[in-house]
Structures are given as C-alpha cells and as structure tokens.
Length: 283
Image: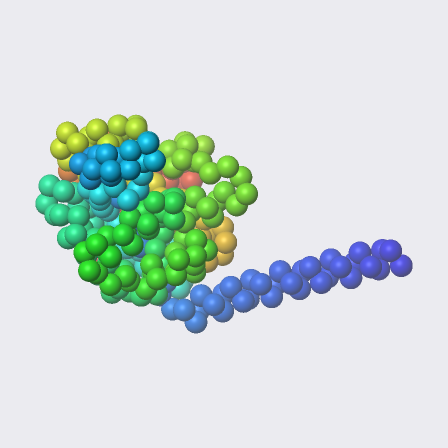
C-alpha cells in the first residue's frame, strides 16, 4: 500500500509539472512579443537643499543625505524584445544620458516616454524599489509629469516590474550588484561603487556614462538568466549575451567597458560553450 501511494504521488507530481510547463508555454504564446526595459541611474547629491533642511531642523535632521536629495545625474536603459521561437532577443534601443547633454527633468521625461510607448513592457532594475523608483516618483511630482503604467503600482511586487535584487534574494540578505555579478562570473562596474558620486561631482562624464551603461549590461545578463530559469523566455544564453553587447557597442562605440571588458567576456563564454560567433545588430 505504501509503494502504491508513493507511485500515485509521483504520478501526480509528473502531471503537475507537465501542466505548469504547458501553462507557461500557453502564456508565452498568448502574450506574443514580450518586452523588458532594463534601467539604471546615477545621482548627484543636492547638498545646498540638504544644508538648508539641516539648518532648519537642527538636531532633528537626518545625518545622511537621503534619497529625496538625490538628483538624477545619469540614466541608461536598454529595451529588449523576445519573439516566440527566437533564441536571441532583439535589442530595440540602448540609451545613455548624463547631465552633460540633458537636465534631470529631460532625462526623466525621455525615460517615461520610453516606458509609456510600450505599457506592457516590464521595467527591470537591480534594487530599484529601494531608491530609483522613489526618486522617479518624486521627480514626476516635482516636474509635473504623469507616471507611466510601470510605476503606478506602489507595491514592490508589482507585476509591471522586476527588481532582480529582490527576485534573486527572496529571504536572504540582499547582495550588491557587483557582489552578485562577481559570484556569477558577469562583468560589472568599471569604477568602484563608492567613487561614482565623486566622478559625478567632478564632471567626469566619460566614466559616469560607462558606469551607468555597465550597470544596465550587467543587470540585463542577470535578467536573461533569471527569466530563462523561470521559463518566461527560451534563449541561447551565450548568443544573447553577445547580441546585447554588440548592439550596445553600436549605440555607444566610445564605451571602454563594452570594448575592453564585456565583449571579450561574452566571446570567451561563447567559445567555452563551443558555439560559432554571430554578429547581431540593433534594429
């Protein structure tokens, strides 16, 4: 009797797995093209306004310059489209902006327009629920902008977004992006995290631009792996890594991170997997 029960339980488990696999395939087929927009931001501290607040509040003031005083100094995002039956995503756009060419309001406005253009695209960040989205919502109110659909739901578990830091962590202690990247052999930040604020204040926009783009590239690779592991997409991981790298390099040819770090890493992974190199271009 015990053996029969075990056999029955195993049969039920097999049927449940088949049902879930078919359901996932059905959802993908019904959705049609699936899009994600991977984004990252770098900040300048608004020291003047913080100092005014500190003087006004005295000892009651927060001792650190928290997110309400963080102004967006650089923004980058990459838009990917996944077609059913295709093993490599289509890179629809790669954007990098800094204070050198756009104001904070202009950067936020352009980013909101990108999200609004594809309201069903999921917004993907690393730790975005902790600060980035709060700053974007503050900016919307401050500049009189309407939030795009992806930012309307205030829940950190909103289906319109994926915070990969939360998604990969579950109940474990949250890792930093370069920490998780190093542990999973993905190239990350060309400059140490603690130096980015100084680079912004010095106006070293070449390094700032490379940093924010590198964060998007690293987050994109993690996103591809994460979505594939959950059965949301079916891709060739190595070919996809090369595809997004070549598209980004085409959009930002001056990036030393892409040319000297990311591209060699992606090609090494493809060689290790015994695959032939293919050149992909953005649409």
